[in-house]
Picture 1 (tube, rainbow, N blue to C red):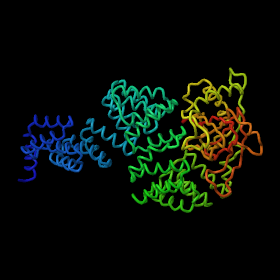
Picture 2: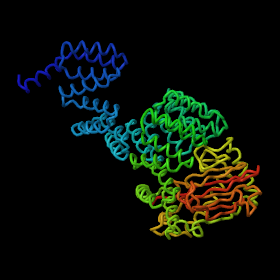
Picture 3: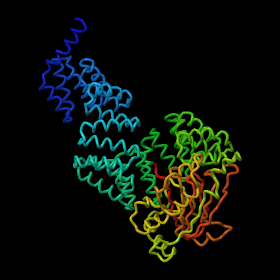
Picture 4: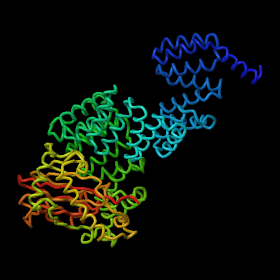
Length: 616
């Protein structure tokens, strides 16, 4: 029998298949009755062993039974038997995607769409694959192609919303989810995903309502619990937030972000055993590099460096010197001042992960701390090219230039030009700034609901609000945010728009506040030196200050500029400003700043914000 006769014979077996029995086996699979479906399918194949639909169905059955290798073999066999069937290739592509081979899946999906551009499930699979690959713009194009053939495709709107969300185009994502819900109001996942977007937009009340609609429609599980926790935290419903995070961690103990959020919340509440769930999961999964690394970094943030180091070294013994683990170890060694050892680990990490910004940041910090700005600058310049708006890399460049005594340093850290102080006047309706700040302090006091500072911020010995104040409905809070608009405008007018300067070059459209929060320093409270990586113009507004700030020699609670996060040769503070109630200080987000500790029992309360020019 020649090849053509063989193909005809194989196809004839497909035509001979018992359609009713094939449909029954398919229904059994869809009902989750795997063993019965396999028995029915194998009975079919005894009669027609070369029937492509039955071979394909058996492949799907074996896949659902957990035997991905045999499932893949059978799916490929069915394609060889009937290569013009798009469903076969599409299902194989689904399997390839789920088993971690997205590039191969994309190739197959595109092959199908070349001949069958309207094959909906194939395009949906391609969208998910492109999203897995981080190619959200390409995924968006495919979503819009899907919608072009049916504007009332609710799933297509949800997929489009997903791609927009991953591009951080949150208002557009919200609109797309709303469109999906409008078309199919009872789908719980769209309500949930809308809630997750609203959480990221700091619209906690609306987010919680959307998540409750999803739950009322039957949705359960990790994602719902996690996003409820985030929304409740923004609303300062702390007990409920903790319960939600506990529920999320119980559902998925290996989810690092959930574990970190639960530990962070408990730490801020003053719970001495704040990391117990993370410790339990880490002990149960000693070779889970992501969880172990996160746990070590949590320990580092509370100063338990010996335990953090021991944990990572045990991990490296078990799983080998993974670059992500070495990067975390370099951070811990840096924190402990063991710079030579830290550099060794950081160099190895960056060699393996040259585009990992956190690993490179640690290496640059170490090199500067060791007095080697020439070695640090090539890394800084590369990162500045890749991330031109990231304020941290401008700060590192400034530190290196200062150590080299380069004139360009003063162009970046021109304190007289770029730090501006505004002593504000009371807004309309208030008799004085004293009266206004007293009401503002009362509003903020209700939002300082925790016992201590967040784990992952510059604050030490104090508290910080958890919700973006822009979304806070309190009229006094909104009044003070409105009061900041004129100083921001004045600052922009004064600094100019030089194209060659990283601050001034962006000064080509009105800036608005992107995020605002409040901080209270308690006894021995201060900020470690830091920058605001996502900002452009940053601030400190003093709502109330303790009497000790008046001491010109002690300078308790004064804000200082120019000193880097970790000590570097010759890089101390160069400018300080005295706090005063009603005073607003504006400065570039890339400028290193911190505060001297306060020592008494009287708190210092501030509002900080980042402002960013609107995109043209």
